[in-house]
Amino acid sequence: MKTAIALGTFDGVHIAHRVVLDLPNTYKKTAVTFAVPPKMAFENNLQLLMPFSKKQQILKSLGFENIEILDFQMIKNTPPKEFLQFLQKKFNPQIISCGFNYRFGKNGAGDTELLKSFCLENGIEYRICNAVEMNGEIVSSTLIRNLLKQGQIEKANNLLQSEFSFSAKVQKGDQRGRKIGFPTINQRYPENLVEIKFGVYKTKVLVGGKTYEGITNIGIRPTYKTDYVISETFIKDFSGDLYGSEVEIIPLKFLREEIKFGSLDELKSQIEKDLN
Image (tube, rainbow, N blue to C red; front, side, top):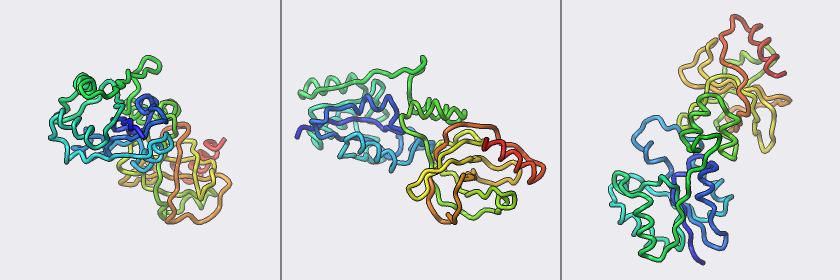
């Protein structure tokens, strides 16, 4: 079977990425990507839109049976033309697809013009996809990260074409919620994901294959402070012990900023308002 390859980091697999990934189903489709965006390889604080496992799951759902994960440290000093020769030797592609701003090779010196000329010399079909705009803005992973940091979760989800989510194990908390009739699950917010705006969200909660409605506070708790970002979720119509379980939280709508409460009664009253 003939092979078509798509080049990109594909963090978030958003609507602009999906143009690059729109390859014929009659070809063996291969995504050539990185586990972490190269520009983040030098940063201690990753700001990913999704863990690699979720990105891999979405790519497979789009028909990519082969996902090649490049090691940035291994190839960062490869001259651009050598990188293209590596792709040709390894995959023998009949089609190469990438975005308009794709860069490759040492210091990002390779661009789409070099890719075009290489493909023409070697009889390979090339597809350089134009920018995708939404409401006058070019869609990019950076744009979506900024939307999430601003609490614009609905707009971000629309551009992602999937819902931003995070998963973490449920840890023991101080059980203050139980005292006011609103038991919550406590999770440490994943450090390698983009830090969404602190505050209270309407959420979906995935527990054991079932979906529940939830109200989630994400932040450092101004009333009972923590030294790390914590997610506290009240799950509507659920009872049970989830300690140690991996639970997925899907923020749907930003409701309000974090508030410092003077008492548990004030906190209870606010949670009741959030649920309505």
